[in-house]
Image 1 (tube, rainbow, N blue to C red):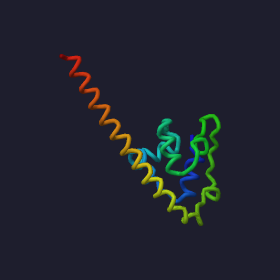
Image 2: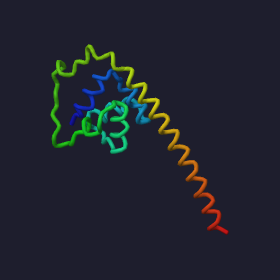
Image 3: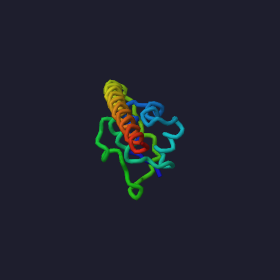
Image 4: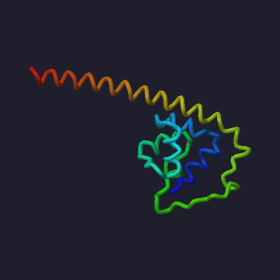
Length: 122
């Protein structure tokens, strides 16, 4: 099972598997397994990947019953697509800002829940 759309778009955008792995907070080998379809990609991961690639989730997500394996390297050639690095860094910064915002919200929620537990324990 191969996620051809995901791999193809990643290559077209000139983004490495290592960069994509960082977005999912995983290692490169695990990301590679996800891209080959050996490991499940969860919905939240699809959203992160789509944001990094600047495409709708539906454009990269494939259902397992519609997968086609393409071993012809001619169709996977990404030559001439190196000018697309710029958009990736913009999205990484947006993603980092979103993660920081979510982190702050979780900290606040954590404090609220601790106070609630203290109140219940009295």
